[in-house]
Image (cartoon, rainbow, N blue to C red; front, side, top):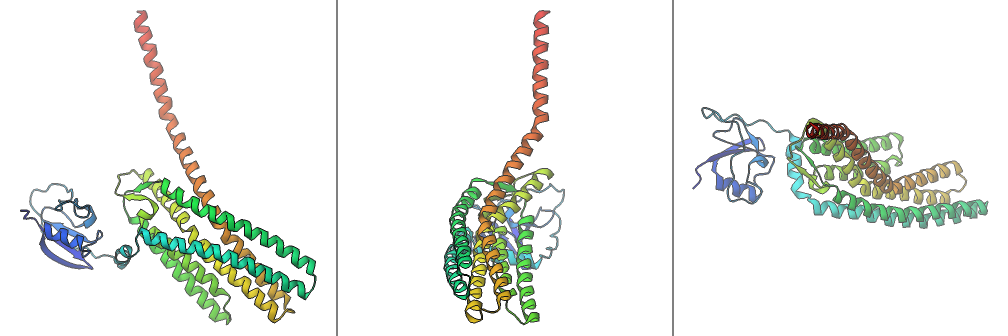
Length: 360
């Protein structure tokens, strides 16, 4: 029977001692998360529970983390204080697993696809209303042109969202630790809140609602990117692989590229909904007061720009993803050239030495 006694710290409260079997039961019941700290006699400092072999991978009992041998067992060090953001991520992550992230992504994609169809219908309504106000030829021609553009973007966005999913699954990567995913998740969450609060403040200051749709769209898109950044498994990243400084830098950049590509469907859906709202508002203004052409033109231009930009996001993310991996692989090949030249030179020297030996 294993007599090792463990201590663990959760929510800045130290608990213990518990046996190895009890520690395993706590992990299985969700009362001990991978980010919580553990310690046992013989360890020089506290370590995250995820680093204890056998604690979360289904083994019968946890083994000690790899530590430097010490001549005498140290006294148990004080458990370090955890940042509240770490506790927030550890609380939120199990409640939003990869399956749920995929479901949210599909929801945003559906919003974008159906939103473009609604925008196409509103474009027809707007063109008819403009034709009734005067200059029917110009209104109908511009309406048909924009309708064709939206139809093409609708097709392209659907195809690119599928392609992004396949690229993400095909490119498995690794990082040595979770520091960057956690930082990226919290930064995106904070930026989303700032964008929403900024839009509310701007709307209150101007006594108008116009900034609100953009703030809400930014909040939704950045919130989804925060979810994906906090879940390396959703980006097909493994955590814990040893890596040098250059490899870590490359892994961080790759993580950022994959997280951005993973969030593209959410940004697409939120942006299209925002643009569709503006197109509907333009129809409302035109039906209510057709003489206020300056406000109608500004609203229409805002709607068209938002719709086109949002619908192009999946295609832009797909091209960026491919271009990044192409340049990354090309750079790695270039860096390997000196070593290959050295190998070729050594091989040639060996051949020359063998020939000289045979001649002698």
